[in-house]
Image (cartoon, rainbow, N blue to C red; front, side, top):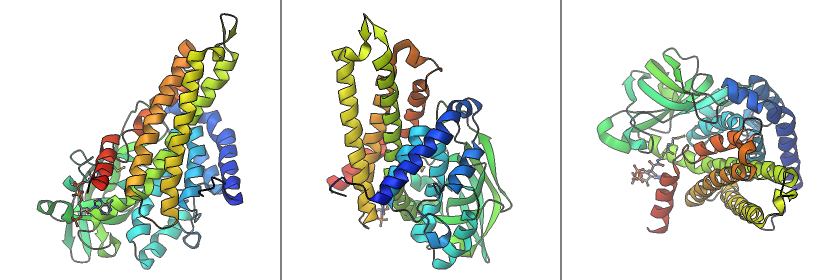
Length: 379
Ligand code: COS
């Protein structure tokens, strides 16, 4: 990895994802942004192409792809459309607690069935009172014989109304703070769990984000991940593993903005020459290209740490916040280079700019990432 030479398999997967994005995602991205709907036909084709459920081991029905190769694939899918990538990415996020803390029995019970057809999963952590402050989850889990009974409301949950499988975080006792949190596997057909209001978003619009409402949801004790009180640690360890993926998606969005603006600026004639001939534009491209490369290097480092079994909490947060900030900056600059055309829906850059904003917010705001980094480097 340090040689920066991808393996033959990584190059193949990169090409597969790039070709998939070009053939299946880019042509429909604007339409589904407009309709604010999940493009199910893309989910089905991506499933057939082996581009979903990347982290789940092959013996459990997934692709068994290492985190670095997954980051390479993610960049390409997000290059096509961040919303499509977010729909796939929510599966990776939702199953990670099971991969991290599930027993062999739990993994075998839930993951092969989930992987047997194109299905979506959702990670049920965020609530109105618990976004950055995960320890403040209000959803209650009350033990009743061989069951826990879950009651509460989750918000901003990707795939929240369409998931076949949920991982839900709830507290057995709010006064215990983070030590009261528990993580549960909840099949989507369990009575009492349902999607609520679907959000109307600024960008990332083909990805479904909804409330998840839990009313007397009876979950067998056998679906508890780890033991009572392990939920906070499971959530943190999950986010440590998935944040490099958000960084990878951000690199994809930034690279797409760069490419769109480059194509335009080589063709757009003003004052008798392509606008790319102006130093003011050239410097913007030079900065964009440098920062995109720097972001990708941070992403690849954190993903490679995970691939070789190292902890990558700080490295993942660095990759996530830097790449997300670069995606925001690159999309704003790309739009500026394209001027009035960039602002119009005829071109994809205004969508990229709307999409990029969420990268600085979800899976931990960029301010939370700086908290994680500061705590690690100053301890
Ligand atoms: N891995 C393992 N354990 C971790 C951990 C990690 N990455 N981070 C914290 N912990 C442990 C701590 O060691 C501590 O353990 P002890 O109880 O043994 O002391 C415990 O968890 C509590 O940690 P801390 O005091 O740091 O928790 P805070 O409540 O201060 O929260 C932040 C820390 C803000 C970093 C955390 O709440 C967070 O990441 N928030 C953002 C969540 C997020 O991304 N939300 C988006 C929605 S999910 S899509």
